[in-house]
Length: 330
Image (cartoon, rainbow, N blue to C red; front, side, top):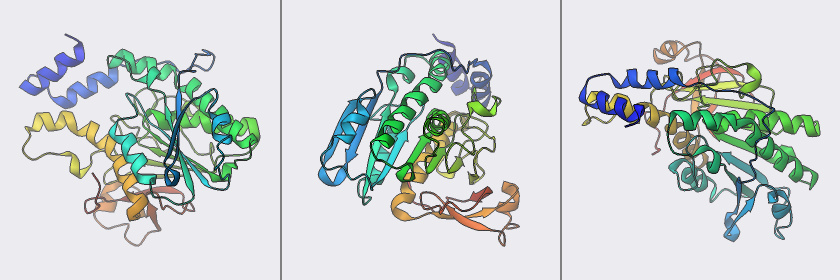
């Protein structure tokens, strides 16, 4: 029986706490951030969506730009949304489905989904995550080249908005940096939804998503300090509720230990649910604030505000908080 399965069993029967099991997993991970591995990532698939015309086309990443640019109905003035999911992602995962549904009816736009699951969805947990981290730079490099090729074909980076979740958010750091180095221009916006914390939170800045790799970098924290990073990284950092645990991720009828085990994963995924719901239903008023307790107690009620979620206008900087208790998402 694998160590993680043993820990889950022990936590459920009360021998150890579920939070201790999470801490053990996070502390045992050992990762490398290298840019000279030159790993083969040609197995990445790129899914191109033109929803109004019912077009869904997968391309190998090595020929994706050519395939997209040869699409006869392509309008290069449209908005290009790109989603890069995280560890253990796949095309039928809930986070990917939520992203597809969010943009199905969005006008004048295309959606591109990067499927890197062949490299990041292998059997196991600890070793699989460590191996996935090794691929982060080379996956980012390949995605950046896709955007460079689209740019050379007439797609302006001003029309490109990249969204990442967890490990995918950290990949976008390299996407933005490499694209800028190759073109002298920057992607208009990167949205990092709960960027992965394990292996990254204590890494050098150049290995993490950060301000400067796009014209505007917004970071959302939903499970900070656990599966997500607690580091302040973007032009703007949003903490959803307390930034650590989300209100809809505790199930009243479950034993407390089981809730403690399941809640971090739920909160980590909730960032995608919250953000995608905001595409159709609008954002939440966010308040500039130094910490959650001041936000909770109303001390920041007269501070600068902006919108959290898809409709963030992109002109605010700093640390903001917003609540989601009354926000409809699932």
